[in-house]
Image (cartoon, rainbow, N blue to C red):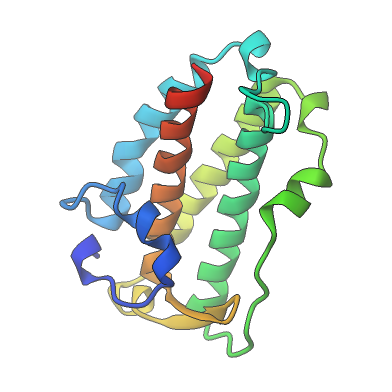
Length: 170
């Protein structure tokens, strides 16, 4: 599935989808992003991972935990829609999730391992979907979204946070 084929997703996710290169097919997008994000995140030291650029902002550890949690949620939504779930899935409040985890107690290495494990599972999940399944839709947070769109949103969410880290943390 190409990004240009996307039709069903909430408009607020456009900012993530726009960050995925136009010529990326979904599965290729995961493979292309893998070395970029692995090298980038592994370049961050344990010391730097505790940094927040302002008193009320997340540390890099908090952000990576958010990225992991969000990837899990997007993957769950994709799985539900792929399997024909008819009920509306709930939204999630990122600040509430962040308030209920203490990423600072984990090492950067442990957080990286968790993120990479979740990412690998996401790659396999989306790879398992046929073109027909990628077109299926469901409702999450009262918005219609397609399985394929969730794949591109997942990729774009990571590019979004990479950009924030580059601009505000490094």
